[in-house]
Length: 459
Image (cartoon, rainbow, N blue to C red; front, top):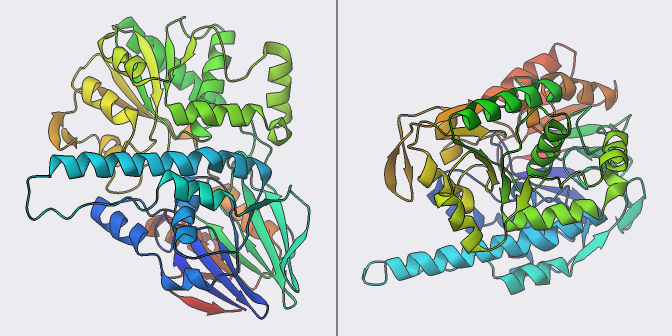
């Protein structure tokens, strides 16, 4: 067998790995690369040629950096099954179509804007909504712990990764060896989902390393911090702007706000989730309680809907979103996208970033070269829609909501995979994080490698 590292090698996004076996080839994930816009455009448009060698695909979870290029793959000729969990398939119904709509809208806007430029090269979306729907037809679902054979002599079991709804670590057994693709590993003792599982006695591990050099704050203390930020900003009459990933992070933040309201720790100010995608995905969460942990089920029994409460409104229309610009504070606006690169959050930042009474609360990882990263760095000025804007609003960073395992949990994951693991490959992380985690694992006598993009490893 061979592993071909086609994406997420020495970078955080664009997960894509090909496992070559004697029976055929399996692609694990086919995600968007996110970063510098021109580079992202080129990499997402020009998929590595080896992805088309795949006979079948397994999708670890619905986050766009793991799933976003799947419609492109199908559009360009892939005709095999795409195996995943039922919850992930349901989430992708919305994620793929939303991605297509954003691409189509952006292409139409830019082509119209540059219509009089003779040198302008017309932009085409990577895929349309019809292409997204075509990709969904390839999905075949299996619940956790149910073995299946995608190819003769190849056995796969999906284990609960505890990262987002339906997320899985993929254990593949072929030719007498076991390879574990971790996907993104969740944190223990987080709300909503069960803790991540670690299959034992694995020969090779391909493991994410996003937070390989640092830990997160406890979710309880993070909620307390959020309550303080909300109350302080509300006292100034300001708005609390929370850029949030539509999938998982929004639901965690909403559940956290629900806890704070039930406990009387924040005032009864209006709270808006201004993201149609996040609203649709929240409905998917409600339809998959089988993924919930005991805490979420108990909260639901005691208080009702975990994702709904008295001061919370889910906006849908563009008109409702625009109205928030002229509605005076205090209020909380949770909006996508999480890295501030697209969607309604960009408009809210444009309208609120230069007002010192407001607060921007960052609750997730911000990749290099994104607007979100520039906010975390608290630059004096940032560009929004190409226009320089002074950063006068406060910026607070709360890492406690992160759905990724921290350094200690990543070390524990690698250890639990088995004392006889032949090699651990670190992927899906920035180099600083990967090097730090690799050093920690080597001190524990583990054989660790940080592969390059395009590297081929014979097992």
